Length: 396
Image 1 (cartoon, helix red, strand yellow):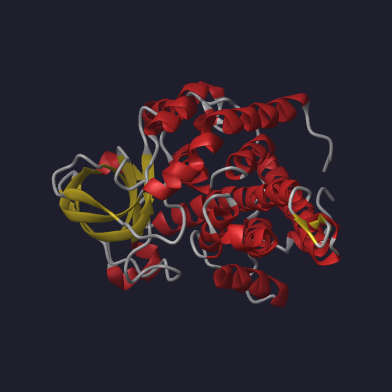
Image 2: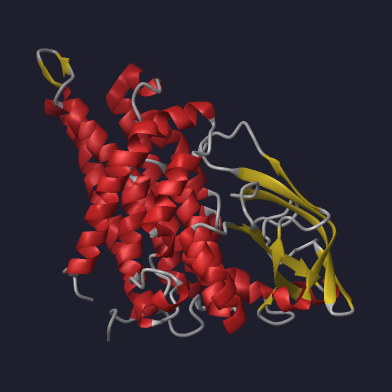
């Protein structure tokens, strides 16, 4: 792995940081207070083409690699986790899944419009009885001529009320378990499809979250993504991309805490000197810096493997687990450093603290990541379907 970024990667990171500072950061706190998905910010993101960062140019994307995408995602999340959610869903969970599993006709139709923001997507896997147990899908898909009739409920679906299309996972035969799960691209304007906003969230208050209800929604068989029974594979491959962007975003949370705390710690005085000169404050900031550097290396290793086309479930799980934990620790310490002001939304650290919690929950809880990692180490189940990459240096 080459630790030097290319000029293109550096330019993307710089451009995204400047864009985020200019367009996202000034309104992040207000949007969080108002629990508002900001369409003005979203339209500026669409205009820049950011949603198509890792999508090939022939499908309307920027054609950049996963390192550039990770750096871009980190920079977005450095100022606003809610905005990063749009990238994780639209790019990682939907567009890249269609890129991997779609027919040429599907890719030509959906991807250019997803890269431009003309189409927005959501990822409908989680159900009231199917969270970590993703194979326990209760949504049914019944064949009816050249169509399928879908009925069921999805919940905690990011971008659920603003999406034009939803990737819906349903079982064609419950007796087959996960082998009966099939994925469909569903037009959210279809008869019988409704979305209901979820309010009162701890964090990500400026992102859209919904429950989806499918009441005998008719979907053409041509809208199937992959083949019958491949839906579980489709879902897991999508999560490898989603967890990658969550990991990169989590490092952004840590970096946002560092930026806020180092500035504040040299402005705030106690006992006749800046609090940054107190060793306990220095220790907390040092922890943040170490975690940011380590987390960044973990997600960049996953990006390196993605660029090579190598399966990276283990490396992505390692990054997602570590970076999510690091973000939670950084948010906690940042509030401590700010003291009473950390308990107020006058400063962004209380938002970082709240937003960080979901990084341990969605797209695979920390317990699921530990399960993947431990089973691979124990030889019970290889995460990558081959001898563990951690047992051999990357690139060898």
